Image 1: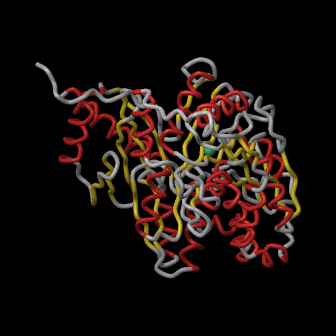
Image 2 (image 1 turned 180 degrees about the vertical axis):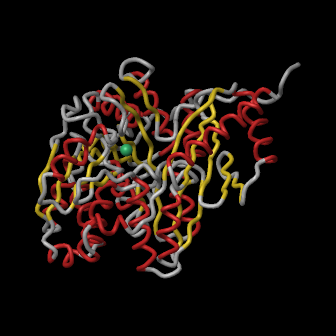
Length: 458
Ligand code: MG
């Protein structure tokens, strides 16, 4: 039987741009130039470009820029900058869009290309689909000889971004508190912003891995407990108010408290959300369904409320715009400050926690006031074609105080929940739970894993 529905073109952009291992998996100069042509044919105007610190950045930036210029776009090259610095520059320079060459927290052999909408947000999926359609059909705009684009360097993005952050935090309070912090830039893009920002805020600081180096000699650029041992040891040795670590493109920040304790991202999310709601009564905080209950506890204590979205920072950011939220973010250390811009922002996260500590006391004391829970993660295999049916039957038969199907099936029972989500890229279901003790969390997740396996068997 013939179908009259055109087959969908293969998807290029994942949740955070196109990613792959350089010079394999298609992440090569030919691909970057063709994607640049497609992006330029869509953006039709000046494009701001930035990179993180990877070894393959010059190659991919040059190739992607060639495509953009062939389509008639001027390229405003910001060099090595954090992703949020580029996003701020796109918005304030009224560019037609932005292109960031980055693979964020991936190992050094990876790189990626990520698009920014004119308002500085991560590109909406519907716009990525337009670029994918141009890419697959080769329906490129080719400028004539007089209208081919040019590349101009932009040297103001970092300074303007730092100025904006400084203007949005209580600089006097921070200076008066005479704080001392340790910061690990992970040899990434944070190296060009965070030390300068700390100087402007009058904070004494010690840096680790603060030179851009795509070989990542310090540690890989995902701020996991394993990759942050050096800063934990440094802070434990004493004399610091806290420490913090950025991922490779500095849109995320993980904190280490004054006692040298690694803070999982939902603890910093809860802390900053609490003070955002205290400053603006009845504040709304947006986060995705996988965040810890500690976020809702901290927000309620401050008189605010929480709205949950599907997983993914662009989705959280757009929900924040629509609902007028005072703050938002996800449990991976990506915090979004609407007073600056609607995207995850690593440097602003550092500045905001400095302000909170300067005004409200030691980070360890503030954190100890936030309830803490145990989490457990497991997974089970499921053929892709069965996922939808399993999800439907799980939601229909789930017994709990509340069932939320915003993203997967999340079942609440008392002070615990379990979230069952199909993976978008692998034939598996992820089962994620949270409860008051590690045993409870494990038991809940394991029992739902069994339940899902029963449903898969039919
Ligand atoms: Mg990142």
